Amino acid sequence: MRIKMTLSYDGSNYAGWQRQINALGIETVVMEALARLHHHPVEITASGRTDGGVHALAQVIHFDSDICMGEEHWIRAMNALLPLDIRVLAAKEVNEHFHARFDAIRKRYEYRVSYDDLNPFYHRYYALYHGQLDIDRMQRCADKLIGTHDFTSFTSSRIDPRKSRIRTLYKCDVLKEDNGVRFCLEGNSFLRYMVRMIVGTLIEAGRGRLDEKDVEWILKAKDKHACRYKAPASGLYLVKVWYKESEE
Image (cartoon, one colour):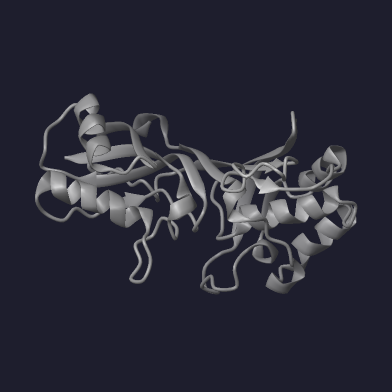
């Protein structure tokens, strides 16, 4: 049977989602827990990869299993085997054709900035900024990015040039918090570093260093070298992944 599982994790102690040879990835830890449960290796597929230091409130994976258990049993069994910074939130049997990555139709990321740069407990979970950012200016710039565009300027140069950089950004909200800022981005899919580079650019706007025309120019340039900004990984969270109703 195919199992769809939702995970939450603190990415601070990991080199990202993907399994790696010389560093510890979250994928490796989850696979080891599943292997102990099944007594054989189990391959898993995630909705997407998160980079080192990036967190998830609702990462979705799928895998095939020969174990028949209800949701609560899956949650208890997995959480007993996983470290405390990786938690299983939900698990259920789904159609054998369900695919955690290719069936995803929408994702939400949030990025959190705190002005409390003297708090030693925040550096893992926020980008720390000394001063105040101009919320209205950042939102005006963010509005220029909404829609379907070629986001080449806001991604890694390591992406295969044969793959499309066209993505649709449905939402890019800049929200004032009690002692900081929260960015909320929703799109059909995201390129590597896309959220962090967009947020980094908007923060520069919030500092008064860029305006709407600058952001438009960066977007239209379709050039990896046009954007020099990338926010730290610590403030980024994968918040939600949407699927078709029949796959929710």
